[in-house]
Length: 176
Image 1 (cartoon, rainbow, N blue to C red):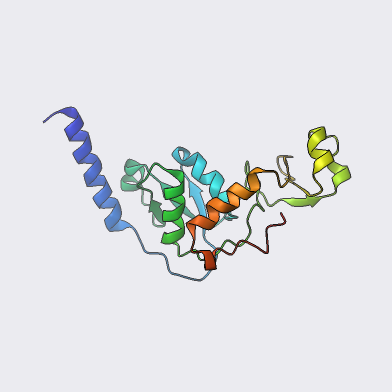
Image 2: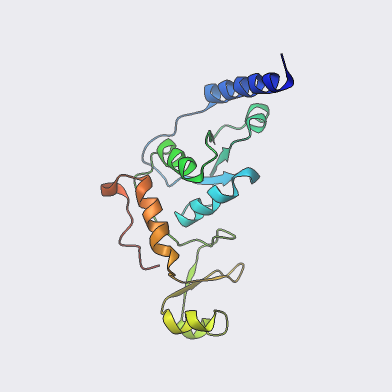
């Protein structure tokens, strides 16, 4: 048996061990919060977009060695490498039926964003953005400024596709 075969068998064994120790998350209840390992940077960003909180976290990981070796109790083992498939798996695992606050957290540091007056951001955003946008939010921790740019529609479309249309919960909070 070659080295690659040995690695595949070991990985397969770890995945079976992980599945056997995974717990099912109850539907309803409090809004889940996550911590993603370093391999899941893109997923972590999308969870911030969807409004996930930062405390009382569920570990999200694709690292089979981490999940087998550590005594992690609350985790979701993500099997896909594709970020949208990972998001769908996370939302299904924790029975997410709606998004509590879309685009309300800083995409860099996960802090809650605060409404900012247009004049406050005049020298902190590009001139064209200042001229064409009226709504701004800022992060008090890292100082980043956000506005509802052209990417907003595509972000909302991606999130809506991850949940049934009647349950997406995106709509009344689109003014961020």
